[in-house]
Length: 215
Image (tube, rainbow, N blue to C red; front, side, top):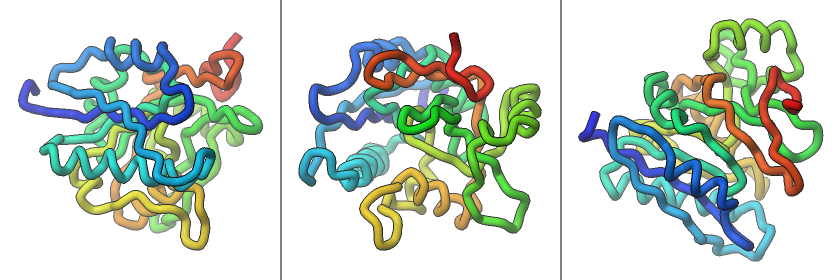
């Protein structure tokens, strides 16, 4: 494992990453080696969602050109547990997601239902399907259809095959497009409920707890 290298990548803007984000990445316990890149690559005007795509594509190119085995995306308002990288690597999935709540609109889990094959459509958040969520929680891991870049490990074969892009005809949704591209390319996506991440919403930390905000 000591020869395995991961690039932890945090895209940022404005006032930069939360200090808790930087502290949690620095505290990652991992059998291999990892470097952490805080990226300020925002070629579009402030607030333009195309910056997300440009940032992720920069991280992808850095990982490929640097000979890394995987890219770990950690968004700048996330707080990841110390075991996040190790657990996501141990899933042995081409794409592995930590679990967190989205901060826009109704807080729902980033863990999206995987429809049975041969469907290559992205499902809905398991927060909207309590029975399926309960089964996934009992298992601890679940095959999913995405989504999000909050705490996501992407292995090199996926990086080599799929570039980050906006939705066709739109300027947003790079994470959804990536998930759809993975489904179409046959790359398995998994989520580990043991990698429970905090997500700062501007005033408090949202913590995943069976799809609700933890008390």
